[in-house]
Image 1 (cartoon, one colour):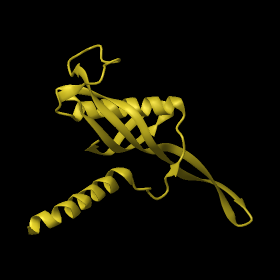
Image 2 (cartoon, rainbow, N blue to C red):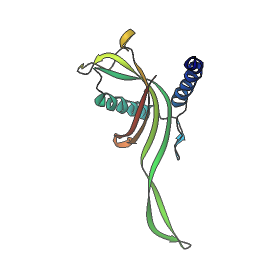
Image 3 (cartoon, rainbow, N blue to C red):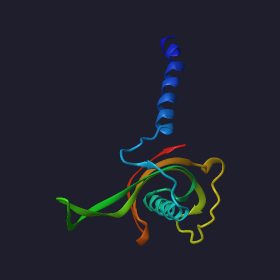
Length: 157
């Protein structure tokens, strides 16, 4: 009888924790909600899914189904110019790259790892269907096509 009384509140608590985990993503200090350019979005998401598939032990490849959210922060270096004006030294601020926090929904496809034509893989259906929500921190220097995946965590959708 005691367990039965707690079953519904316990399920409610579990549901609240899961919805909070999936529905509320942290806004990191210094990051701004800014839409990515289409070119940066495509290259960043392609890099992310390639990195995910390379690290995954799954037999099948995954693909991005939906970009849920993106935040960005530019990285700068400051250079002193050595020009003195009114007892201050002028400096130049140079962008060294961009950090993106992307939240995406990815899905398992019907293509296996060794398939060569994986650009248009359909999603799995029925028993093998699997979707994940991933939040990733990606550093990029887009003008030289450089990317690094600094952090990634995924939960089943």
